[in-house]
Length: 294
Image 1 (tube, rainbow, N blue to C red):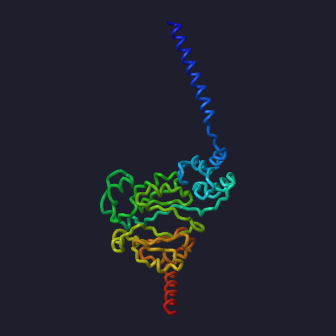
Image 2 (image 1 turned 180 degrees about the vertical axis):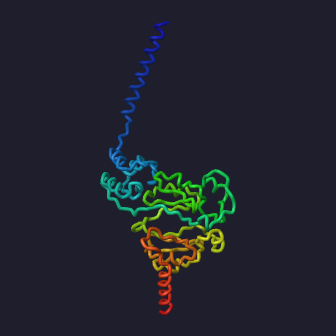
Image 3 (image 1 turned 60 degrees about the horizontal axis):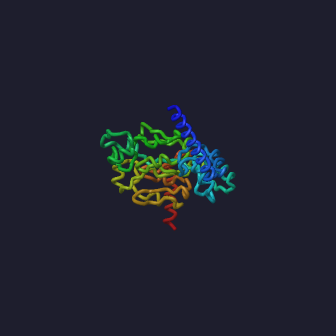
């Protein structure tokens, strides 16, 4: 009986040794050598693994960057241009700097101008809420106020303002990873160029209803009147589906559109001086008079 046990152990041990040797030689034969630059690039990255670059983490970003012919499709929003310069140096590739971006909330439907018409008593999730109905207010395009964008932000750049019921972006903390953009079921958050010294203009509304309906739903809504389009001399504003949009690449930050907007749907951010609404209106009126006299 003892000899049977001993032989069983010997056979199993021998079989295990043979299989281990087979696996060792197979691994050696089919081993895939990884480019050492992948590890160097990954160590250069911030290690946030946020997915803001469009890849499934920093390792995937490094792997595809090393294999790419150029870095046009690769940018780490957390590390920014400084990190990308280091990556380009490792790979011996030229890197074109990109303008820093920041998230902006395109809804100005505060509690004061967008009163509730019903009460939601379900799960505290914008995605769930959007799947059930259009929201608590008459505006089917506005913020649902549950803070899904705040929950997904890994950098503490978003918070809910209890007074307005809207999310607020902290420019200093936002890395433009895009997670909040993907989390908003109403598509109210957009990544835009930060602009010189953080100054920028944008239409804080996504309502595409016609003017009277939009105004009834929210006092701050864009009503598609087109005054901003007529005012802008830089052709930076377009009007489509009753909604104005400012192209950040063309906008000269003159703030004329903001001053002329009858509902306050256009927002200027981080300007050093308050908006001189009356002064700008006078300048626009004088320009129109000159044109009419020609």
